[in-house]
Amino acid sequence: MRVNADFSRPVVVTPDQYRWTASPQAGVERMMLDRLGGENARATSIVRYAAGSDFPRHAHPGGEEILVLSGTFSEGDNHCPTGGYLRNPPGSAHQPRSVEGAILFVKLRQMAPDENRRIRIDTQPWQQLRGRSVSPLFSGPSEQVVLQRLNPDDEPLAAHVDGAELLVLSGELRFDGRTCPRGSWIRLPAGRYPDLAAANRGATVYMKTGHLSPGMAA
Figure (cartoon, rainbow, N blue to C red):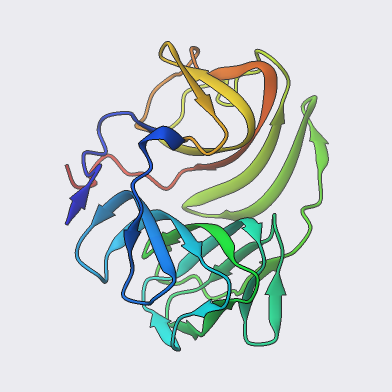
């Protein structure tokens, strides 16, 4: 399966385009944002757990990254609330579930093979960086992940980037003549993006940079 598989072109998915599909496990649905492969794929998705749903224990050969958008996500006795951030490195395994239900932003098989740290952040520490509120989530040789709080007209990408990915967590962004409300996902190839900015209400965004190489599948 190939979903938004041309990494040389910008992609914008807004909530009105969400189309939920069933996963192999009852009570768990996915909105596929990008995907290269079948059930065991390099994939980026919004995943929706119904209350009381779970997955049997399984491994993640290429790692898994999760941002909890709503509800509580659990792995064994570890419970990650809304806003929580997790990284399960390549070769790890878990048995995920949600008692109350949850919506997650999930990235599969996109980590460096030598990444070996499990990361759990329940409450993001915010700091001021160059006049902007930023919450660093992860920094490695091949990617950087942060949350940003943007004032109206702030540009999340103020300089040339070698590719970027953003998820609008609150407020709105403007991009290429479009309004991108909460829940919008944007993937950008290398370039400069002065037309990407927070709209009148400002925005809070998840942003990942450094992870998209020019040679990715098209």
